[in-house]
Image (cartoon, rainbow, N blue to C red; front, side):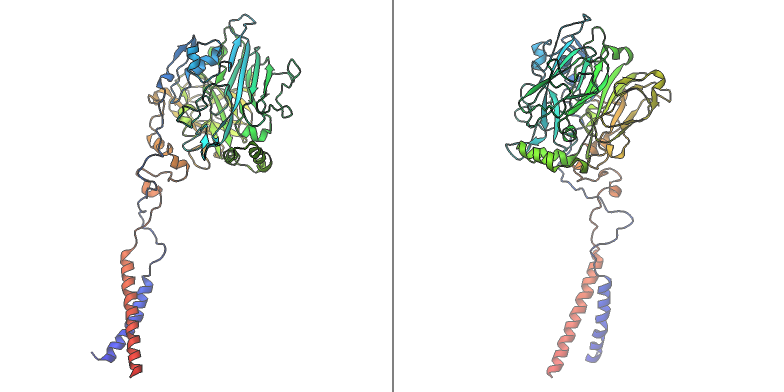
Length: 554
């Protein structure tokens, strides 16, 4: 072949190779096949983020038992109340044995009961002492939180709560940063009997001023000595001070209490709780504190006459921007400045929604309503959120028996399956489990939740928020956790889920379709063809350039 033809062939090959190279040039992205690529697991093989659904720390607490003469009902849930706390809450710290008191974190004067004034077999002078406790606040000793309390896996918003006066350490033990079980959200439900003379002392061990306002509770405007008795902002109890509120409620019902100093902030930080006045009955030793709300394991006499069980359901929400203020400073002047002058409640959001101090899935541990067939269950429901709650109970329709502590006549009682509850409002519900197609559709693991869509989210992640379960007892395992939910429990009891580091459906048969969109393997054939074509074209151009240069020299 002559040189002329060879050069002509090279000249023709160069544009052909260039065209091939352009056609096969690799792109920064490529279209996936019809079958999506395999999910990439975005965590290491370590399982430190995964929790056991139930720690099963105190299985013996679930049993029905009698302590110091106090009958305590069975509590099948995963995390039942400490029965010794219940015994002391019923009889008073001054009327239980030292052995019982030592099994609690209550101070000796946290709750004293004396003087059967009306001679009906129960005490009528009740003295309650409350403190203000900070949870998940900044520690002055390092870059960590102290008195930690998780509302959900890995979620620790700053909170303030009222708590019964306690003794000993605020922490579980010397090697822990976790708050002891007495110090938790929500503030305890307080129960007294109609006609009792009740003295509630706020011993302010906190660094900001606070009050206790008894919302809806029958009380005089001033005490017998003429001091403040309404807990308003103009009469704050400053740090290191104490103040006693005096009441003798004449009207029974489900009421409310909260701090009334800078109410917008202190209320939303958690300084609020349910206050229930029980009907006066003979030999009526009521459970004064229901720590963490939930099941009432020692119902009052009037409740036992009409109901087989009793539960307190307490709904709260948290703005994480407000909650973070106490996690960024220790100086009370800085906290007061940021909370009072920088933070603007009118620009706030509700990020976390809680039922009885927890968000789903932790609501499965201590906020499950456990039922049997053909029961009448009493529910006290309170809304301490900033927004409306639309409580919906799957598979059941309950009856409203009281609004804001006022019993409704039979003709005015409404049966429905969604209950609108305004902020600070309370409802009493009668929940029947008779399988008749109206009251109940039959046994099951029936979800109940806020039907306002944000209520079932945790900082935007669903499932979360105040979701819980009305569980028929045969459908719970020996630890009080719902059966047939293994796949869901594996997913949600994982800190990565609520940290938004994990796909919602990261495991199982549908993980390739619904999990993380992993990296697609490069198209190596395309890359090789492009490289060869581009390389040959460039090489031929160089050859032609050299030939041309030689000819020029000749």
